[in-house]
Length: 356
Image 1 (cartoon, rainbow, N blue to C red):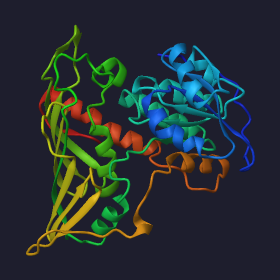
Image 2 (image 1 turned 90 degrees about the vertical axis):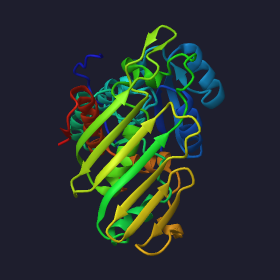
Image 3 (image 1 turned 60 degrees about the vertical axis):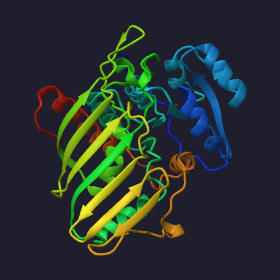
Image 4 (image 1 turned 180 degrees about the vertical axis):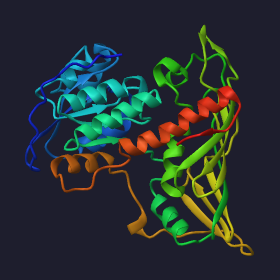
């Protein structure tokens, strides 16, 4: 783990929209190229000035395509502690989120980090503590695209009592990405890279806690179906089933699998005293049914729909301290990391575990 030293923080200035904002990338893989670079490239006066990736060869290939003016560094630390960088954009796997984020804040940089928040709960908590020490610096975790489009409508319907009092819920997130035993272990299956993250667990905990409140207790069972992949011993479960209790009293069954062939798309059912509400994460369709009426599709007004504006939202907050801070912030990240940690503890000891 990187050891932090006393670092002279760079001066912090409120930048006008005409001032260039300089971004240093720590990790420039698929998610950065596919999701973040289109958004950043569309913004005026935003420059990629420094890049470190898993290798200098891959960093050169990235810069040739996206940022020919950027300087390439072999060490990520040289991207962070850099007078030509205002924002540290962490696109590396979870094992590096803590070190790059905390060092970035120590160096006086705004920090955007990729989901999931960190490799362990203690690392996430230290990231949160660092963000509290430097409140003038903008910090954010990349939000889950799952449920982003119509999540505002879901929250509104629940708050208005569209299904009465929510009693229980079911969520499944299944795919067959890890079903082929002949394939090497994906980095998300390597505990030294991904940490305690399991499949889409952290993503959906973030979403569910935004819609339904905090989870306070979990019980979990999971299993590694294919324990060895080309000589690598897998420790992260191939599937996990979770019983979760929310502070409101709602109970939920959450099922995740990477070895489910021909599985349906990700979906959530919320059952209440006055009906049923569902969200299809593949189509973003919401349905609502009463006790005696069949479910119907809920139309979502445009003002409640949210498009992907993650990069623009972060840059706006950096330029204007009065602008809304992007979410999820590090506080929300710690909240879902506590649930993920409790899932592991429950799998290990076979008992219900409190998350708070």
